[in-house]
Length: 474
Ligand code: FAD
Image (tube, rainbow, N blue to C red; front, side, top):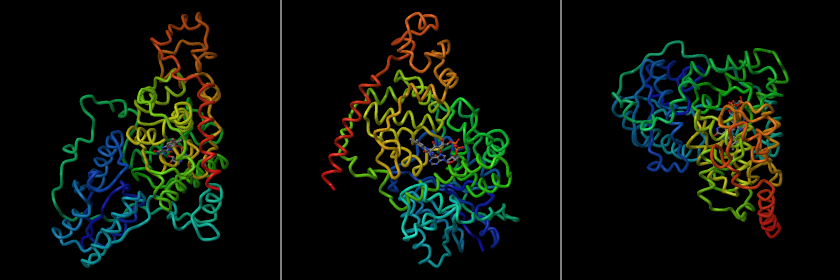
């Protein structure tokens, strides 16, 4: 029997349950379908940086499998058509959790089943399905710590290997990935991505092994330092499913070294689980404040400030360095994501959805669940979020987490000769220190677009509106 394996966010061969089962039963026809977001009701489509990654990841998968039928259009129409054309008896896939994907997949499953096709979905992207981790009362968790405790009480199954035998069935020729124009040209803004990343299953495993060897030790104490290499950078590989969280979990545990760093690292993998848990159980969170009181927040509308933030020209070096790292490499360190996001939402008082959309377009690891949870956490509107009144000071955050200014100097080279004492607040430096470093504020580097103290005060005043709305709801 031929089974179609529909690849989506599981672009790997090892520990791929849909592929494993299909290969054990007979011939496999691997298929990938590129959907046009607006035609299929995807309101939060991935953007340019993710497309760059997808192109390379599909190429890697096609090479590793020895063939992959790539098609473009509506999966609800394409899959039944491929079934008819090939006479396949089954279609298997691994589950996704974005609201539009859940709806689409149930429609497809029901349709195929009513045609007598064996349609099955599997767990591959998470350690546990969102419905497998429950509160004692039987509902979803809304707070991370008890979720993490409940997760640790469960046993994470060992990953499957690669299928022992993989026989490919013949099928439609499919399209040439190059014709999809997923890679940017004119200009090629992703030029520097090549050196930073190796999309594909091999790249993912290399990244994990390198991190376990060189970065895991002291992860707990150094993971907040953007100037050091103590984070894994596995996020895009995880998003595209080039590696599974089960593989990461067991490889890390097998190492059996640095127990507290291991615990901390796995607790971050559990944040990813928690974000997906929230998105699955509360599918409205991409477009709505989790805490409705935040609907009353008096957001500003200021395209100039938004653009200054996007371009890394706010005049606050740690924010600008992060935004430029993002643009140049498709990645931003987690601590800097928090600082830059907080700056947008609190200092500039621009809606978190502007930031979510920009990150979704520019991050290679853009992931609806993690991105929305991250933004709502920072904004204070989310489940188990940072309290709104805790407003990051970009100068002290910079000095604490980039103490020598190495990270800022790397991404804002116009400040590289500034003494460390001034690096996170050039606008407070005396004229002779600026002149010595060749910095001309407003010319070589931006003046601050807002005053920190005034912005903080305005943000807190805005929060009073939220409190008033909450009081009147109570
Ligand atoms: P590591 O520290 O090595 O962590 C290992 C893995 O754990 C990560 O790859 C990731 O899968 C998971 N993880 C770590 N921190 C978090 C977290 N806070 N929330 C959820 N999962 C986490 N992550 C994304 O994958 N995609 C996004 O679109 C995304 N958007 C974000 C937006 C904002 C505003 C914020 C504050 C955070 C966002 N994050 C997002 C979470 C986090 O910043 C990244 O997962 C992390 O920086 C990825 O780097 P890493 O792989 O080196 O992390």
